[in-house]
Length: 315
Image (cartoon, rainbow, N blue to C red):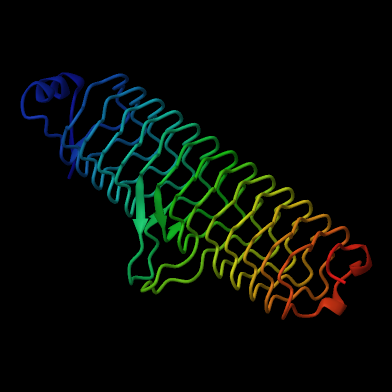
């Protein structure tokens, strides 16, 4: 059973052993408190006010932070392994290099936060998600080089996030809002040796997103929206892009070998220099699409594409 502390008891402990393991600090006002390197393992911090608190390198393994206010908090290098942060507010928080493996962020607000090099999951042989982040609002946050392998992000708001060189292998991004997101050189393919399925971007919105040089091998992207997206030199080898909207998208130099582009909207898309061997464009709308210098040897179902007469470089 978790021991309930008073504010005076908390202050006394902070001056001495700094150990709050399994203590009950729920609903307390700890705004701007300094708990750097403090042990809060398995502590109860439900609905606690920790706005602008210093939790740098704190141990929060297994802590219950459901509904907690962590706006602007410093959580750099904190250990959040298996912590519960569902419905928590982490807007503007500093989570650089945090360990959030097996943590629960469902319905949390993490807007305009710093999550560079954060560790949410590396994937393993189990069927469980490495971290739970469905329906999370991460809009405007910086996740450059973050490790998000085998993480559940279904239905999350990732609009205008920066995920440059981030690892999203096997991650579930179904129905996510990624409008204007920067995924330059992001890794979304399954590394060799992993048992999990492919990265899922089914019905995701990536309008005007930057996916230049991203690795999307065998990605599931059917029914996605990529209007005006930048995919130059990206790798979509054997990707599933059925019914994807790629109107005005930049696919110049992109590898689309073996990709399924059936019924996709490629109107006015730039496919100059793209690699299309064994890809299928059955039923695809290629009105105004530019195929100049594209490698089309082996491209399948050309005769079944729509508006082929208005495309460039295909006939």
